[in-house]
Length: 99
Image 1 (cartoon, rainbow, N blue to C red):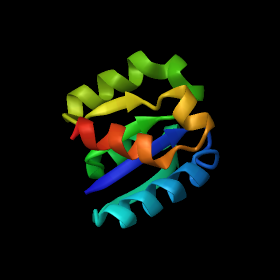
Image 2: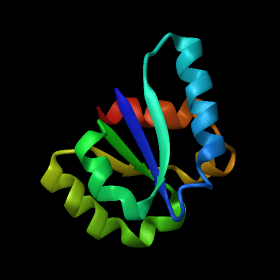
Image 3: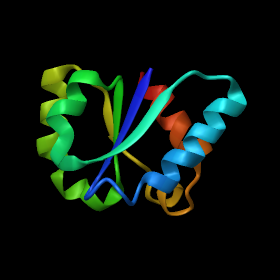
Image 4: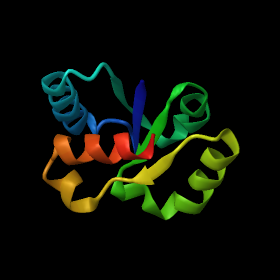
């Protein structure tokens, strides 16, 4: 399973990705989790099982949701509180619920 987090430059979500990986490992879930720039969405739609958007790019929601729907890839915006608190457990749960 592959979870992709997209944000403005692909860097601000790296700490959250690490927390999510730690939580997945703790649960025994085999998953690949990566952060990328939103500019990389076309490539990620080809390989990701689910895409989560950083709250800072929610202004692109309509465009990105449309692309994800066309690719049949689940997509959602990370809860702002979970994102801000780097709550890897909740964000991992959010991704798993979408799949």
